[in-house]
Length: 359
Image (cartoon, rainbow, N blue to C red; front, side, top):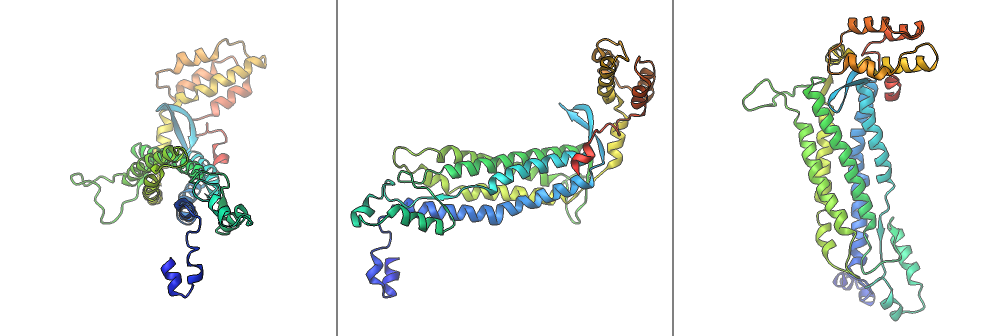
């Protein structure tokens, strides 16, 4: 830089190059600018494409009743749209936190005291000069530091990006599972090979690739967070080596986002499979029946004791069909209106306000 200034005929100010600076006065601003631009101009837009697709699918499938599987077992039905909306909702919340991140830099010399600055010119308000410069770059100014900017903003950011990655990983494993259950069919890609020996297969590789890349990104981001939060005394160099992997972590995260985007654009909901699954699991209405009985007891229209145990005996570990449940409900000591509501209920209509939640 000094040579360049001299070549431009600016020898008189050449010695101001790196004036009173330590390397972290340069690096902290450089990293903050680089990471800020990467997040705001590249990573967040990639996340937004996945969120936008989830929102689209949530509305499209808002009314698509499906059997839930809590603990992997048949459970109170939901809709596919509502389940996808949950992921969009979760991601949007963390996205807001990431978008509001601070990006801080220092400019205060060897140990953060402006000592050399004051020695050179004690009449200058050096903290204010530094603040004006750093904020002029579009960054936040950290006035109280050691030799390094303390990296807490990086720790916060990488933890939040890792959190988003965890949600995305959960999305990938759930879609993979829905594909294995036949809930989603994968749209064939011309010329693609699903398996080297089984020509019929369309493997859910987009979601598997996303999983793997998110796991690598998460590990690196966690390592960054754990290392960057600490600096021995006024300075050590562990952060210097660690920060060289920031781009690697975001690179794997971007690969995952790209795979998720492509995967979500290549699946089609099999509503017939969802309905068939519901139709062989009428026992999930046991929750509704025992809850209605409880309400009827409180209202004085029933004297049934322990309705939970009654339904447990009927349904736990058993396949119960529509006719079996109808016969059971008809024999219950409950009010006629409640009885009629239960007789009209099916697994496909027992979805509460799932459709409205999705929309």
